[in-house]
Image (tube, rainbow, N blue to C red; front, side, top):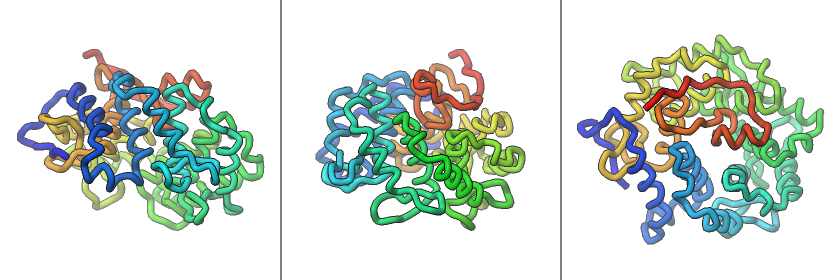
Length: 336
């Protein structure tokens, strides 16, 4: 992989280079890194495909080849998707698979009742969801379950009582600073804030969020160099451009951060030679930070990008066509 360099930083998003970088990732099957990241493959395809959509280059990845890979990861015993062929089903991979198939207009390839049954089997009496049959619980998995059910048109499969218990669990994860943790009593973290706020939005329970207190906590994630961190006293990281901005977008408080400084920080983390975006300048680029950097720029109204829905972290037009759009506001798109 390549690294970004502050000396070679640019004030412009290098779209052609990033498109080429993402395309090349799927062609590097002989690289050791490709095989060492098999457990993230489904997520990585979702990150790459959605980044391409935001850069208006969706057709860069072959549609049928992408769909075929997703379906090859079907775990027939569980009735859901794993991260790679022959991997056990997990809610993280299952949501990414559903997101990919929705974007590619191929949801009809899925046995939806079986996937819904798998998701419901992960629901716990407390209201949280487990990630898989082994039982680890986390508000990330709760979001994945709620989002997946919504995208499948099956949110109603969650009974009224189960839905309320899920909402109540998220509320119990709320801290004095307005933020949310990955479980009850855990410290606030920007990534967990997003999954909790977005889950509440999907469940039509946005009123459970303390908008002003949480808004200030999120705004305080911005450091003097413009970057955002995930919690106090931590380094800035490009990926929080999504976690923080999407949460602020749902709260309709994007104007609470310095958009120009954040945009400059994201752009400074690009690799101007080979494409891709790193977590911060002078570090190794990867598809995860490339996607979330581009996602952040979209919410900031960067010229030429496609709107991203901050609740589902998918192309806004796709979510709107499904009738799933919730209340949120991004910064108005600027002209090129």
